[in-house]
Length: 338
Image (cartoon, rainbow, N blue to C red; front, top):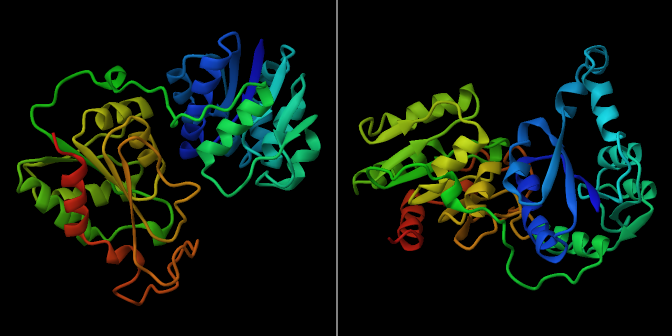
């Protein structure tokens, strides 16, 4: 049986799909998954056992220059590949009008969330079969239920299993223990103060633990070097990493400290002791999930405000600032004991 899965982005959302794929592999090993995913995250499906084909989509690029995407042949090639074969079942696990339209272009019975469950209710009119999945639960649980209902197997009651073996990504034994600081994030309000990262680096390096600082853009690279200046002989700024290379760094870490960012979900999925720092965003539905995942939440009367810019930005004791380096370091020591 061939299943077309549509789950394109973002990094955290794509990773949240892995436990449902693991459930599917155990319940229906006869099903071969063909996964439509944003090109930046196309490495992730290679980590799942039951993904037969990866169909990359470059929507983030194409929407900026649609005519160029058509003239270059990229968009026609994607459409041809999508429509190249009939699928026994098409599952839109994104719940957006965009993803529902992608499902509509392929041949097969289309499944997705009911209009009361989908992120964009209008998407549900493009499915043949809809499924009511209660919203008041974590995204991982919702996806596991959607897969089970769409493919007709009992929803497992076990804890989510991302199916990621850290040994797959660990290629060497580190000379000494290290922490990974995932300091980059999108919203201004989700950033932890740079001075807090510097203090945490001092606490870690004074205990004989190295600090590793990945980055994803020039601004994050500059911040990584600024943090590393606190203890240049005990801090390592990485080159720009692929997702698989980042997974390798995370898999061997003593622990990971992160803001609300996609790579934090990767660390948690790898069962690495992970402390994620939250403030303006709710954790019940999209917080990190994993056997060794811990969430610390800032003390703020407006949290979670879901605002990109902090409404209390002139208050020195606001939100993310209330999560102290000392409190964070204590939590790291508790969850990362050898």
